[in-house]
Length: 139
Image 1 (spheres, one colour):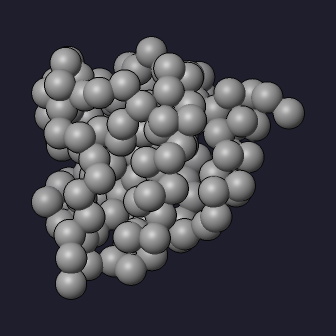
Image 2: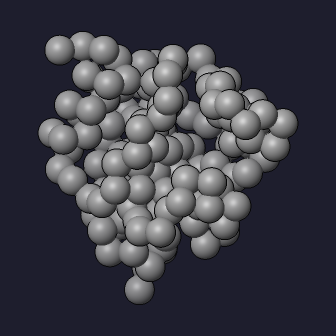
Image 3: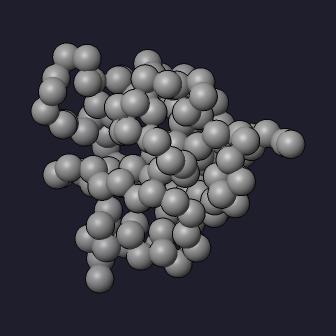
């Protein structure tokens, strides 16, 4: 067994996060940068770019398969979207928030409107299509 460690730990202001990297997210960062679910029941995205949240676990085989794809997409879409990853074993409250009963689970967050959930692993082309059409509104 090996750990998935292809994300960058970042502080709340993302000062430590390098451009084009997957950012490891915790609950505090989620509340500050994505959605403050403790003070609002209605979804309101706080980010300045569309985002993907990858909910994963180190022991999950399909999660290990999709991690390099997310890393590649973070570089390819640098400046256009933000990709976060959340370890469901460490961030149980965030896992429960998205009902992450099976992983990997990807949360696609557009600038406006509700986030969409994508369960399970897929190939890079499938994720690119979702990014282009749903997050960036390109056909």
